Length: 423
Image 1 (cartoon, helix red, strand yellow):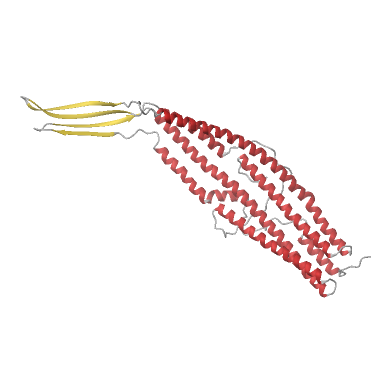
Image 2: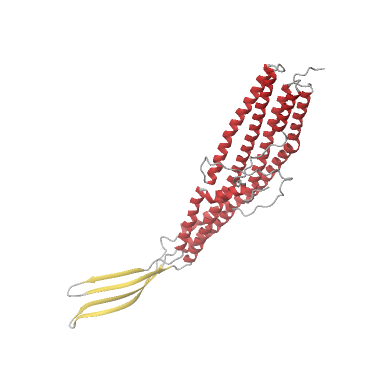
């Protein structure tokens, strides 16, 4: 029979309890907080849309479009024309008139229609940026939540290793262990502590990225809600919703068509119609100076002989065809993106579910069996260390698999054009 290397039952119990309590099957996700309402992915996205600096600047584009809309589709200002001529012997002429120019085509109507389209496109540009910010905040939230969970797991492992080191040190002093076992325990504890510090740096970086999207300073402390657990199954496949970029591309095609019609309508310049009053003094021998007053109409018609706008029409037609082709390409890309992200999400779900349902429970069971075998003297302390290290690796791999699923789920929602975040 193999000789026990750790005969103290109290020390054995201490080691087993520490390992089981700190490396048990249930890893905590995030620290709970009762002092403030914790952030969820939805509330973080809402805060980002409200306080993001770039989005605040983008909303001025909408105000610019509103300002342009107020001046679109109006007649040009009337022109006041005056003429004064003087000659000898008090002869002369004074003329005053008003000239108003009118389009021969429906240019004003097309300008108003184009202005409405530009206003709608400005609104869609803001919506597209809100959608992009929601996607980015969702990813930043998942990254920060997973970074904090990884830091929590690693910190608990470091605490467990430190407690085990103290127990082994006491056993060495009592003569039950060699100094090599103590050195192994100290190396393991130092390694886990260093890993925890490196993860702390990643957590600070992830928090700074989320704070930037929220419009907060980088050192603001965020309290996050727990990440949702894995769903029972992958969400059912569904078609794309209302995507702001698709609507913007469709609106650009309509705007391109309006530009074509407007360029054709502007091939004829405005016609000028005016009213004038003229007074004249002239010498008529033998009666002398004779005054005379005239009232008349004035008409100005430009002839499109040299500049008929055909080049502009050709340019606008080509631009309209380019926008239509880009719209079809975007629709094709969106459909492919939806299919691809859905397949990737399914693969990530199966991987995460495998870790959660099989691999992680098996690793925890293996640790418990190693502890029991060590208590019976069947294995040495190195076997417990190896089982514990393997559990730590599997725990982080489980976290990475869940992170990959939630990121893939977010990409699928982004492809659909949806802003909800719950699986």
